[in-house]
Image 1 (tube, chains in turn cyan, orange):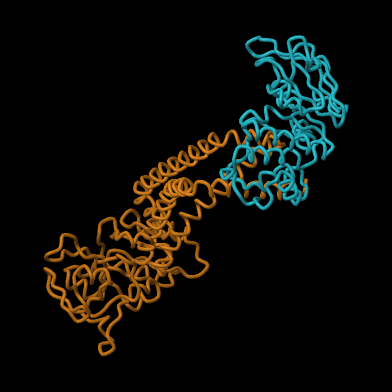
Image 2 (tube, rainbow over the protein chains, first blue to last red):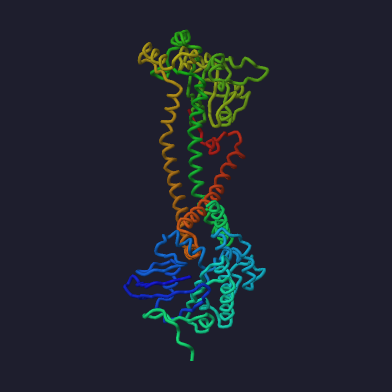
Length: 219
Length: 346
């Protein structure tokens, strides 16, 4: 599904964040990426999503090299194959929940009815006409999960999805995220500092200066 | 690709509708501010056009449908030239006119009195024909009768049957004019009576000529100029319109500059409102890019929203302007000038 080949990335100030990073994510695999602050976890997600470009190396999505795509093609790929979940939810405040969830369907030219199904799947049945301001943080993240999965993406990228939630809500959201990713047959990468969050993934990877390595087994 | 317009329209509806629903007051203030700018420019444009039309129409109402006009080098010239012109080959009709600015006791400005030959004027300048009362059908030819335009009647506070007192004597107000421009203060009487009453016996101000069909205006004008030399000025109706345009040019340039200022102000308001709106919604646009809107689609989206709101803003100012103009002044034919009570004196 996803292959990273010898990725290198440094910031404009010259600080190197990713060095010779390689990894392969299989179809249907759900992994958590942990690591110290500033090690480049979010940067890695941005590179995978085509929102940023690597200094060298290559990213393959279903054997298509991201570096071979221009901006429009990368955007189209992102639209069709990726789902995104952010720490700050990024739900559009003036759209109803139905409209927020249906955005990827609208952009992909798909039927909008599935938005209702997803709303129901994340436990917000009958609230399609509500606005984000009427929701709690946990509910907003549920909407974000529904939006990320509504168009049946092949890869879901979640950046600290529970960073703004209390532990109980966070657990519920994480379980929902995992279940929905599995139910939709997608792959997923969750970037987190939370061990509890990482524990919901199939595998946990540690990102460090040396690259991406499996986490040592818990003792 | 065929779905793209639908997508754009739907997404635009969602985003713009949401924005307006969330901040109705802000949207209304923005609409109002921009409408004000556009309305200023539009209003000045209307006034400008109406002013020119009014000037032009006022000139036309005096010279009627004549092709050429002959004037003396001085204000008045000897009427002996009239039969010469009237009998000139190529002239279908010659209309002699005596034009006088007569002081009115108690008024600061003079009253323009036109002395006309009612039989000639009826064919060339029918607007200037007086309307006598039914019991006095020959007042048009009476030496003591004068016909006033509605504006002149209002100005002098007179009505049909009253007496108009002038320094040279008194005249009986025999009625109004068949048609007169709004705000045009003129009076009409028989040309012979006017010459006698105002001590201008044997004198004329101008002669309007209607040429026979097929006669070239330019050639005839050239011929007349050669024949009369510098004693007389021969001009075409179009020349008079051009002169009118020149007379009102400074005024219209002023209005145009004002309109430009209003338009620039409006444009600045439009730009700053839209720029602020884009900056405020930057995170939303970023999200749209992340979930799959291309740069081009996003740009179109912003422009489309700008145009949609612009259209509403324009409707907001143009329709009330048009409605006001048409409902309050159905017969004004766009002449807002009369609404602003600007008197056109010619």
